[in-house]
Length: 326
Ligand SMILES: Cc1ncc(COP(=O)(O)O)c(C=O)c1O
Image 1 (cartoon, rainbow, N blue to C red):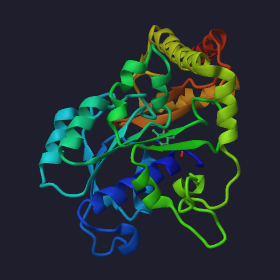
Image 2: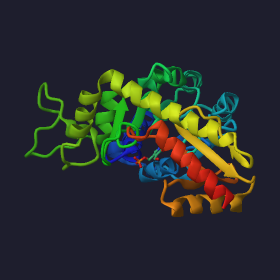
Image 3: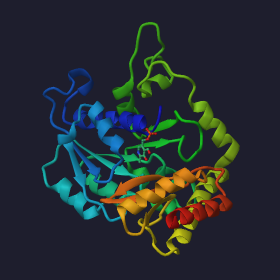
Image 4: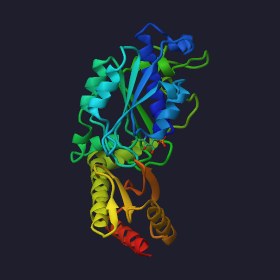
């Protein structure tokens, strides 16, 4: 798939199929007009594209119920249980997150899945980059219980460092996945053909290039330990950014650095933060974007390149400190 958004869309289409089929509604046949309403319970700090995925599936903003999170953006379990219990049972999708785009926060997956499944919900995990925490023994505990979910979306073009256009949809229920996505035509060999798994039955496109090749090559070259090392190194470098910057007067780190994301604020002030970000960008030494996290402006650092070294981090920190004093 093109990316995590497309992967999430495919998984949520499978979810939509399953939760409606469970109440006797065939959405592929009957569409959504007149269908039983679907509740979509989401992490309040979800990625903005989740809403677009839902919209494409006919699940508009009024279907979405946001659950409060902790200060780092991980879903609050009591709040999740409360939201789910606030209405009777019915078709429900819970959309969790592994890796908040600003903070790297990962929802407590095991407990969230248990709560959601107790309510008969389908659990999807948007793990665009955070799912890769599972690849390293040093971060695996952060996604503990992820196998309990029903579907997962992630990307190769973020942490695996393959070129753009590499999203992956994983679904624990291949029948629901294919029911949502499969199509056939007289001139094609589809899943009806005995013993063949037709990849085209699990994606939204009919024509596409062999995207999987880049992912296959990267994993083949890196191996299990190479991927683990890549994840470990990026997280270690993010911590290096955070500890070096936090030790400078007037610079504060705004998130709990659990993965590879670091939020940095300057002079305790939005305008000053934007000024420093712009000055760093203009310096040409490195490029960092900015973001708004829980109402405040931050510089957003995301360490995800296999080429970044400690030396690069130190040079970037020096440039940031110089910009903050300019
Ligand atoms: C958590 C999360 N979900 C979804 C996306 C969308 O991914 P893509 O741009 O690959 O579609 C992103 C992108 O940053 C993300 O961080």
